[in-house]
Length: 176
View 1 (cartoon, one colour):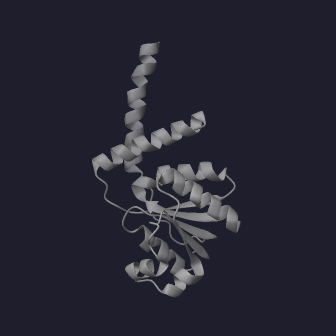
View 2 (cartoon, rainbow, N blue to C red):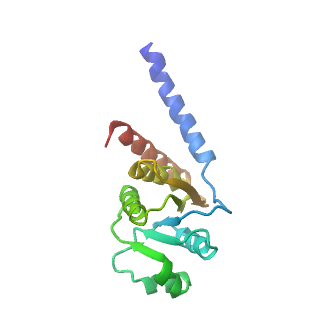
View 3 (cartoon, helix red, strand yellow):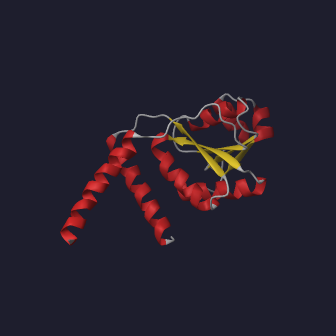
């Protein structure tokens, strides 16, 4: 009996990995939320968030995980975005250093502004784990719309991220 159960584990792992790589999240168009949250760390994320904000898909945006020395005007220049947009509608989160702290920083910001819906912008391979961490930090009281930036991840990136996601899920199950 134990041998059968143990033989199923690698099969479930392989099927999970296949599903993880085949069904990467995609961008979401046409939906409006109260806010947008962009997690720094890979190309295209901030650009996607800015495009959504300029398209009036939300009222405000948080860029989580911004390096402490980056000034709003520097980011506006680097992104070719109007400074007025940064002045009125963009907050820079500087406390996060990883996905879990992105989720906590985001949850605190969402609570502070009393938002009920948020569009989470991150790379496709990162979306499952980022969304899972944010759901844990928010306790289910905010609607999260995952809006993935498409990429072309290699096998190593997907393999690593799949295991990080599994560990995140396991940590949630045991209460860590």
